[in-house]
Amino acid sequence: MVATVLLMAFTLFLWRSTAGLVRDARLQREDRCVEFLSLCAGAVGRVVSAVEGEPKQPFGWELYAAAWDAWRQFGASYAVIRRYNGSLSDDLVTKGETILNDLRGYCQGKVPVNQGASFYHRFGELEVDLRRSLRRGWFARRTT
Image (cartoon, rainbow, N blue to C red; front, top):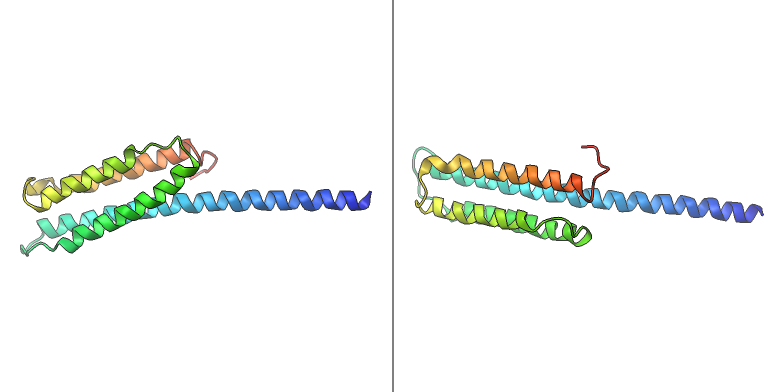
């Protein structure tokens, strides 16, 4: 009888510990996703600053490449989250790719120079959309 009670208590302890680990892993995945999106937004800001900066210098495509690298990291992280929550939309990835493709035209002079701030603003909107969709779905119980 005592052994059965101890076994049940130990099983409950293990179950609760595992549930906490799973929750923590999910929250870490969300944080990585937000982190990579913020890195991408920062890289986009550096590209815009380089294009609009004074004095004018030849534009280095390494800044644009850094934005794409950060975006690929975000895409990989977001794909992991979507694997566990199929209700998350793939539109977020498509929107970000569209912004970066538009940014390439901006860097090539096909978009007026004074439009640079809109790229950074559009990435801010993506971050808001990401946080909203994560709260609504998989991480609904999270308070932040």
